[in-house]
Length: 129
Image 1 (tube, one colour):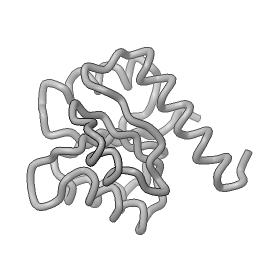
Image 2 (spheres, rainbow, N blue to C red):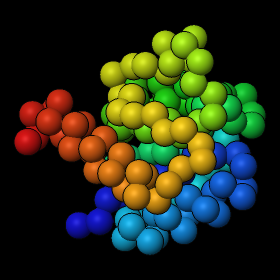
Image 3 (cartoon, rainbow, N blue to C red):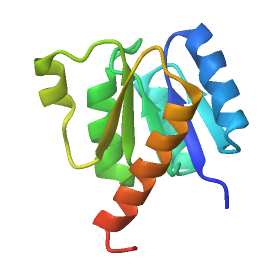
């Protein structure tokens, strides 16, 4: 079964690139959200297997705040995709459902490997592997 992926990114050009990569890697793209609140709504309707989360989002919630809410409500592994990985951001973003960081620009192969690793580690942590 193809993994369900949610992209949470406010840059529309990057969303297009990520969408092409996700489809090229034969994953099931269940949504693209530009804000944290949109991402939460998508999770309510169709729980993703992995979320690709930008740290800086439009709207009331940034990616870190959104990830914490999603973690509490839905328990989904998060892979941060960002250009901002200073030490304070990494500390803020590290929580029980953080399963990776990717630096922009992202390569398709690296994205696929990171998604597979994140999901496998998530399953292992829950005793499913």
